[in-house]
Amino acid sequence: MIFTVDRIVRDVRVCLDLNRSDESLVQEEDPETLTLDEIIRSKIEEGVDYVHSLAPYDLLEQGHNFGDSDLYWRELESGFVVLPGDWLRLVVFEMSDWERPVYVPITEDSAEYKKQRSRVKALRGVAQRPVCAVVQRPEGLALEFYSCKTTDATISKAVYIPHAEIDAYGGVDISERCYRAAVYEIGVLTLVATGEADRAAAMTEQVKKELRITS
Image: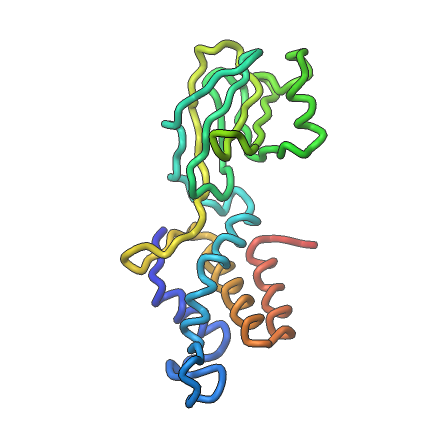
């Protein structure tokens, strides 16, 4: 869902209990001073990315597809797709002959990834228990998949969350159910930037609550 920057700034101000639009962080005579609103705006993309990277899958929106990416096959019916340049996080990936989708990819420095390089297909991910890995390749950041039954398989699901970006119309795409957490996290980043670490720590607990993080 698209939220305007003006609304986000307003809502962050409300959660910070700062509703004066003329508030400044240092003496007003300093021409280099950033206003509070400018600091909030500067933290929006970082705050949204942080929340989207930690949110449970049921809080994330669908709709950002990469299923039309070129599919490259490798040995033993494994393959990869090059990921979009604004990639942040996988939501779901599934090939047409898999018995279940993948929601959480592994990384190339994990022990599990070493198994995917085995010459024995049974030791890799297979259609009954597929595995995906987000890796750096010469072509760019890519999602490798292990493995399919045949190379006739096609992509049936491929959804991701992109990096947050303020668009030309002053809007930001935020998963609707993550919005409150994003507002709190932008508030946290704003408080850190203004030297209010204790308040930032307290507000961090609100972010965790919204995202159902218990530790």
